[in-house]
Image 1 (cartoon, rainbow, N blue to C red):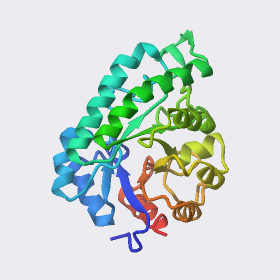
Image 2 (cartoon, rainbow, N blue to C red):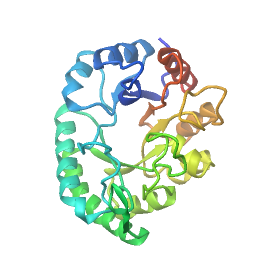
Image 3 (spheres, rainbow, N blue to C red):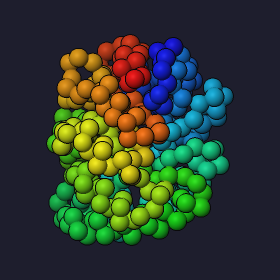
Length: 277
């Protein structure tokens, strides 16, 4: 077991270890998660949840049911509201039934057609209004079901890999995303604070955690630059950030969401131990 203190509840993102190269299946992922002393496998689809439960694990952050790149079609575009809201409510139902806490949410890409940069842009003001409208509709449903909806801030600066950065994502400014969440004003609509994405776009991570402690719902990690391991080749001081989370009274999960560049188990052990403050 890598975790000895257990002050930070840790989770591991399934998709990072289910890609070309290693391709761990759910059973292997659960075995590794238990071995490391973590409590959750996240961003894993509901058909795999019985495997999690068999191992006494939860899914701390669940996908929203959108097909393909689930962060592209979001709440900022009225053309996608019907599908996004329906799929999000269904994901909330699945989580409520399973007893899992969180469903992920996104602003979406800024283009009128999320997949076509030539289709024209949704303004920041319009995007925010649409997000507030859609999230408010889902918020009351989430409150009834006792499930949180966590809106993720993503970076648009890294264009080297489809999962290292997301050029075109409207919610690339943390203050913009936070203002949307505060306008919705629901205790069940929170911020997914991804340390890697915040570092790429803004830096000043510890102060930003303090500023957003009232809406903090979930946290992700990855080394910066490159979204690799949490090792000494990257620039973020993760133990200091974990201590800040404890200082502000954060009691949610921290999900390890880095893309392995070497032996994945060794990298996970290193990351889990580093965050075990």
